[in-house]
Length: 296
Length: 296
Image (cartoon, rainbow over all chains, first blue to last red; front, side, top):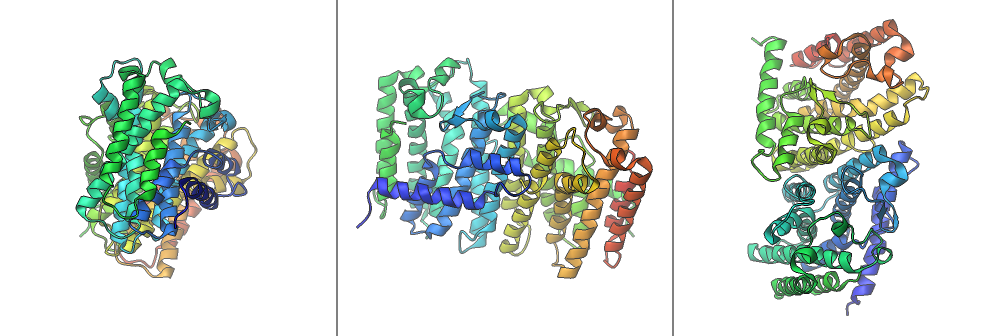
């Protein structure tokens, strides 16, 4: 007998809060303000979608949840670092995140810069400091996987493409290329790293899991664009409509609302098909549903 | 028969340029501007002191130079990332570095932010992607060592303490605490990582090597302060006198020039004494001499 999705995800969100709090330096440790700001940027916020994906994939490979908790924390720290830097005035210049003032508004730009830098470092610290795989060579490969998802050919590269796209007519393939990097790479890493904590999958299974992750990553972004165009700032906990205001291309602006909704539905179906044959795929299925059907 | 220091260091500086160029993404790869800016921030610049220290320590443990080159590149990438972020307007707001416009002046603040972020990621990518130790568990420890030197309790923490010290009366122990983090941690990591590429040292030897690295790290900063107060911008290749102008405490402002020079000499002697018993210590000795006697 398994618990329902809401019970499962709520319990993991609570657990992640404790894991992240444990591994973030205490605000009592010098430099105090930096550590306080790091905690502010990470704790009490977010849906923890990437950690949930890591746990859902870890369930497929019957991974030790204590190991999955570490990779889940690492991907969430990378995500949090990217939000802190992306919100800064030189980038998106946003003042509201997860219903709170953004890190640079609360602590100043210099500290926010160091917060992002230090959260990235802490993510790799976690992956190097805990046993995550019985084979240490495999664990090195897991670290490499996260660096590729994070760096200039992954998430940070996607942000660079995004910056260069403001006010530019993008084609749909160009928009997809941007999102595959900006958000897709880390979502994919979350799924794969969760799976790597457990029993090895064969090549075909790994390809299917990766395809699930790619579809979910794109669907996540399409739904983000739909919500951004149709939902209030209060519900989102971040500034709504800002992409349109910044003249940034979105799935809704390029395809229209109806086609964007159809694309999300199609990606949802592809994701479910990719993992159809897996045992213990319940949480991956539920997360695909959640990501497409969420309202915030 | 061994080559003299100048021949040795010049050859390694040339080699490091090639190694860094090889591992930095080509400017032909998308996102092109980000990759061009990453190359700008790292190549054709700097004394490569940290790589030289890694090679000098690697000589003590008879490490494979190809392995040392990777850790040397990793520490140099971390150093380069920190310079790019530290030079930004939110931090030191500097316009000149290694005789060229700083990264944000040449490429804009948003790109500079992503350059620093991506250089940090690339450093950990290198350490995870190459065999650096016959024992993969030891290699994970090496990655952990670099994260500790880099993060909020290392270099980034030192930068936070530095920011908080502008216009504040620091005592000498407080100034030392700042520098042990801001520059000392990465210099220490450079030495230890170079050594870890080779034959294991016993605990006492590792402690001595670490003491050498701590002394050299502090001596490096004391000499930086002396040069900053006494040398022209043209010679330094970065803005001279900026610490005094920014009302930042330095060894010279706290102790006076004469006592600062005596401190550098004393740290130099302590560093030499720490490695006195080591075989193959020639390059470590020469680097200690260079760091204290340099004029730029």
